[in-house]
Length: 88
Image 1 (tube, rainbow, N blue to C red):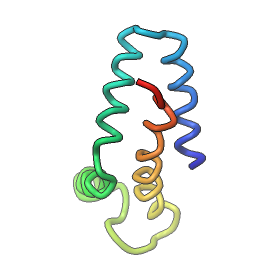
Image 2 (image 1 turned 135 degrees about the vertical axis):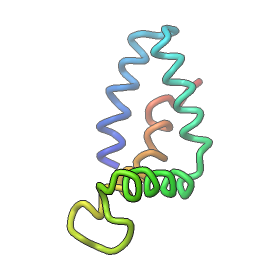
Image 3 (image 1 turned 180 degrees about the horizontal axis):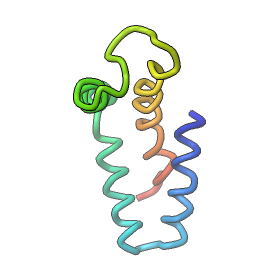
């Protein structure tokens, strides 16, 4: 939750300040896609890219703090668009 708030609130403020700009439109479109994407699909994509592709994080098991990065990002990604752009 804290990760999503740290990302969503500054981006929401920037979109509010630059209303109807290309940054605001890009934010709306990205929030729409992020809300529409299921979290399990995002988790699979993150595992494929960052665990299998770049070998940055473990695929399974617990090996310290690095094992918590992908689950935290996956859960935060579902909350960020709701906090970022609650109104279209």
